[in-house]
Image (cartoon, each protein chain N blue to C red):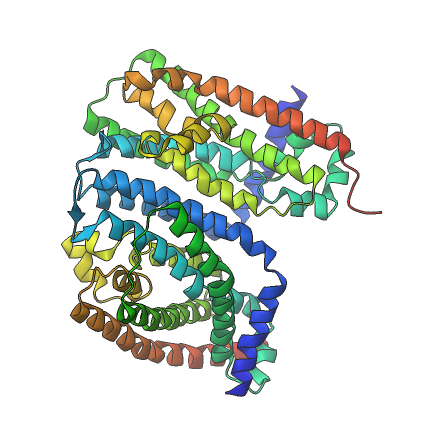
Length: 261
Length: 263
């Protein structure tokens, strides 16, 4: 209960500060939209020259991309910790966080949230809606529940990977330059994994399970029965990834000694 | 002239001090190239060629486009915007060199550094990992070299323009980000221009962006005939000259504006 009330308080403060600078907010929205637009244009142009991508149609690929945008938007809004090393460890901000009676990771999530990224989720829903109507997909009432579960699973997969990476900085002063690399690997999950070779497919499923953010869960809604096992594993993978990363984080915090003298 | 060469050298040495940051950069580029490699292989499926390009030419196109980007890419637009915001530009203006020329030279220093420490080893890795096709034709290589230099000039000119526009606007960040997406899309970095629908191609023909990535990459993969390659380089050269005009005008206007702000 305490955590929820803190969350709401941070959120209201956040919205207040953001609404002070409305043009900045608008520009951010616009550049997010452009970023998503570039990827969509890529898909549209490519499918002007081919019918199938390893058996997947244009609209199915668009649907997967739309789905991917939703968990990614949630992740980008709440787990903005790619510069954790510089911001918290090098500058000693972690000391301040640790003196407070709320879990350190939760505080960092609150301090660094960027709610404007949620707009990407709405874009994703629109893209998915467009693709679904062209594919004449039908949905059951329980698909809504599954959708929420899959989206949360995907979000936690992403969050788990990035929290684990951030935790590394408790042990070594590694530069956060692996973070952008992870963003790029994350992009692999936007396309059907069967176009990659076996090694990459294995990595994307079990080691850096980015496939659970895009193609696997989306395959359920596209009624690709052969992928159902993976689809239903999505929430499980989310829980596993997130739990592991929390354990790693807590172990790291215990080891933390501060950057000062 | 000597002072500009010194600028190139200084920036090169500065980058050299931070060279470890670049090793991970090579992996990032390789990962990007890898993703597109598989994507394009799947897109081609059984088709022998699309728009006159084979799948080998296409994957080589992607690899060379990203590696050439390491050379022509620079952040001088952001640097200019920052120096304006922090007021440093006032001091730069009283120094005995042309500010814009100096920025371009710093960009060139960065480009040469990345070419040696980034593109060359990166290209080696990528060639080993993916089966890429490199021509042995000396003429193609020399055309490609010339074309890449021209693409550096055009990209820098566009960056100068974008940086200077932030003199006049309050929110420069959004503008610079928008510029980046436009260049990613219209320069041919992620998609060859010949893949776009006809109407889009004819629009892009009147814009300088394809001179940045599309033309050198098409030359390198020998997707252009000799005539097309020469025509492409002419296109680049013309834009190099044409872009000087808005830069000159904007620079004059910007200097006037700066005096008002500093007063």
